[in-house]
Image (cartoon, rainbow, N blue to C red; front, side, top):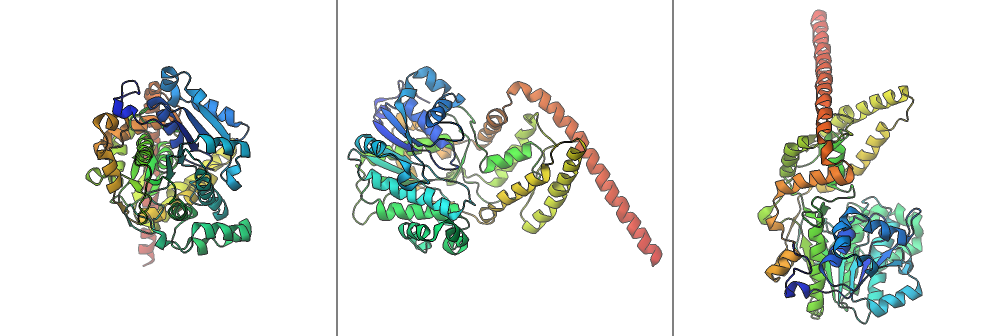
Length: 508
């Protein structure tokens, strides 16, 4: 990857004078950190205004300082020691009206901002509807209203999701407002009239065919962009399932346990042993660093074209999933992990890691009884004998509740077109493609997952490579224990069946 200094003139033409970046979502992913690091490292951005709220006992300034101490920013801090000074926190909260921004800060944004990146969201599938509407829909409308006052505005990028319109199984780069039973504005008005309790009680009625509040509210937000954003230089970015970095600034970097990373982490610890997955369906994963690059390029392209949309045209949409010529199946993901996982186990495993994958929900429910619930009670009983707090049954109940919300996406096959995204990629020069790479065709998936396993072990497990020999020793001991238990259980079941058969024979 080329740095700003090494980039060609074409690459350096992508300069973002002042940017507003939202990161106040209740449980948002962390692509904003990748985005901030990349734009500071690769462009001549003057200032980045970050919409952010205090968290726990940390002030907004504390959170910014902590972000820059993350290993993710190590190279940037060396290359550009003053980069931190260009990041300005704006106190706000997407759950509040007008995002909780003070009049003084609003005026600063109106006077200064030229690029808006809106990625703040709650990504909980089971978020109460009233909260999801406030964060994912109303905040989007409030931000567009504010953007219309920004007289220097050149581009507005709304970050949606490839699965926002998941009631459609083949998704083009178009709007699917006909799938909704209400507009974003009317839904927010009704929610305010009804209040949290009544709105949440009517979740199923409002969501209609949408499987959860997340996809429903993300679809509403797209409707808001279409109906209220036409006067803005705006575009929509729809990423698939966001996973660890492919290359930059660190290979395999991850700092949250959302989506497939949480499943992988649970299996690696020996806790999660049964998975409900259709292995022949597409795994629509996209590396987070490539998402950041496409966000930057889509903003640049919008600004370059002046954001002009013909009266009958609609703001452009950029779908971002694996290229159909380099498609990733869940089975490929499974085989790659089975090959590489034994090479880098964790030192904190509680049992030998393995996973039984089934595509029948009935069989899944039977197996979790024997591989999760019953072992959980046994483990809790042992904890009780040792005077420790019981936790495994509670953990399994939480896991089963969280994974249940994914059933809809397991049971359906989704396909996408990426004409706008591919056209944007081919419009870049060689230098720009190197600097802002989002070419999904070129990804080597086995190599990528090998690196992501190392990254998960290092950045989430806090285990360095030198601990691998110790972890392999634990792996071997747990394997012997696992086989011993299997032998005892299978032997016991066989003996019981034989005894039952003999008793039945004697009766006859």
